[in-house]
Each structure stands twice: as C-alpha cells, then as structure tokens.
Length: 394
Image (cartoon, rainbow, N blue to C red; front, side, top):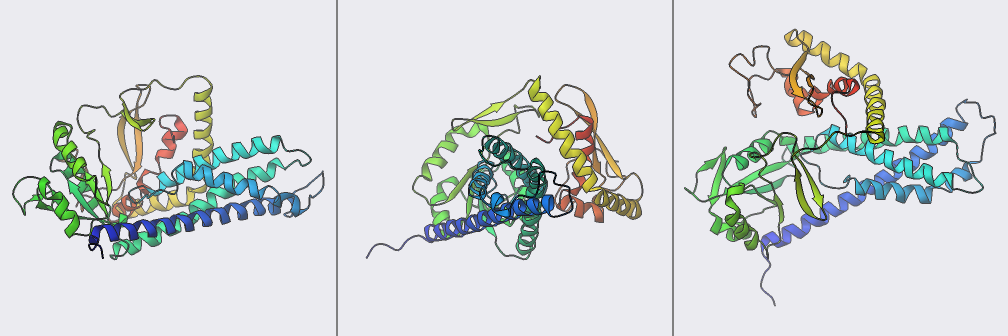
C-alpha cells in the first residue's frame, strides 16, 4: 500500500470535480436558454400578430440551424470567460460579458445565415433573438448569483484562502475579500516572516515563508494568493519554486499599486502578461463602432432600468435627503475632465474630514447605501456618462 495522500491533494481534486460539474450544468443551462430564445423569437415573429408578407415558414425550417447555433454560442461564451469562477466579479461585469459574447455570436450567426442556401431566415427573428438571449442568460445567472450569495453569507460554499505577503498589496487583498462576504472567500491566515500570531490587516499570521509547505499539508486551502511586492522578486521565486509539487490553486496578484498610472492595462502576449502604461484613443471605424455599441446598450439599459433608477432615487431622497447623486471628478481617455455620476451611498458629511476610501463596515455608509454597494447598484447612473460619451462600456 502507498503512503496516505495529503488532505490538501484529496480536497483539491474534490473541489475541482465539483467546479467542473457546476460549469457543465451552467453550460447546459445556457444551451437550453439559447434554444428557448431562438424558438421564442420564431413564435413572436410569426405567431404574435406581426404581418408576414412572405408567409409563415414551418417551425422545422427554424429547427435546422440549432445544431449550428448551440455550439457556436457555447464556444463564444467560453471564449469570453463566462464559465470561469467569478466570485469577486460584479453583476454588471458578468452582464457586460454576456452582452459582448452575444453580440459576437450574433454577428457570426448572421454571417453564416448570409451564405445559407435554400432558406432565408428572418432578420426580425435574429433581432428578437439577440435581445432575448442576453435577457434570459443574465436573468438566470443573476438568480443563481443571488442564491449563491445568500448561501455563502450563511457559511455554505466557502473557499478558504491562504495569503502570502504582508505589505500594502497583501493588506489591499485582505480588505477587498473582507468587503465582499457574498463572494464566499475566507482568509485562513497569512504566511509572512515576522512575529508568529501577529496580524496583517486583521488576518492572523500563521507561519513564515519557510513553513508554507507544512501549512498547506496541515490545513484545508482552496486557494493560495501570492501578494508580494515588486521588491521581493527573490522571495517570490522561492515561494513559487516551493509550490511545484503541491496540489493547490495558486493565484498571483501583480504589484500595480506603485509605479503605474491609473490608465494602466494588463493583457496577454502569448501567455506573457504585458502592462500597458498608456494607450492612444480609438480613431476611425473602430471608434464609430464602439460609440454606436455604447449608445445602443446604454440607452436601452436606461429605458429598461428606469423604474429601478426612480425607486433608488426616491429611497435615497426619503432616507437621507438631497443630493441623490454623488459627483466625482475624473479624467477621460482623451484628457477631458468630467463628473462621474453615482447614487449617493454615504452621509452628506462623509467627506467633511477629507476624502478617503471606503472601508469594510464603514460607518459613513447609509442604510440604503450599504445595499447599493453590495449589489453595485450605486454605479448605474454611470450609464448617463456612457450616453454622453465620457465613459465606455468596453
């Protein structure tokens, strides 16, 4: 008989298996919703009283493309990261990814139907389909998100995080995790040299860098986050080398807190992370296409969400009075200064002692403000900034 397997290895495989099952079920749900949206688009176009001068085609004619449509959407959704873990992502972030993925899939579908022989598919069907797909997918995923958030707040579906590092970068990671309890991430402890039992931003130091392997084998660790500064390159290499034979999910937080501007971006160059310090604004047709996308999506969202926007504004007005909106001066990509709009989530005198970042459990937050921050609803007025051309959705 072989040696007993470490607890971490067994747990890691179980966690991976459960994640794969969840992603599979999510993919099957998306395929079901896409198929329902396609059939519903056909029904609304030809059986809802809309005139059809060329006649009503049989349903079978619209069933034939489904073997093309379903794998197409699955591949595009996968390419846009819709089956990756999004515990720390905002609902608006996932909704934006769904809308972008749908737009790409619809363009590919339209191109495919253009070359189809013997069957002309209604453009109105495709138009209705392009609205129904993101609506159904975002609606279902929002419901799943809500259920998962509530379960995580009650201690279910948790993931335990071991953090490596003790500087400002590590403190920032801890603060963000603590501020999003609905993400279901819990700090197991911090690995850093220094006094054992000390604290980093409220998280307990449970060992030094040399103890990392023994800590992994003694505790349930779902995710290990390395948050070392750029000045600790030698220590970083030693930590990564010590993890070579460990079965654990490792994530690295790059030190972008110092030395880079607010306009920095991170992209991949064939697997190599590349930091962009400055980008020139889009010109020509790419700028026109991007602006058209922003106008259509932002105006549609403002119309659809207008009852919610009015309800939030009324709740703020009744709860803490005017102003309803908080205005923050920002600089756009073209150097123009504009006022970014958000629903006010803090007391009116919140900045009386100076401007400061929001902290977990910040006493300056109003009751309605806590709710808005939890679900990122305070950012909805930024759709007006998008409509004005001061911000962009993509």
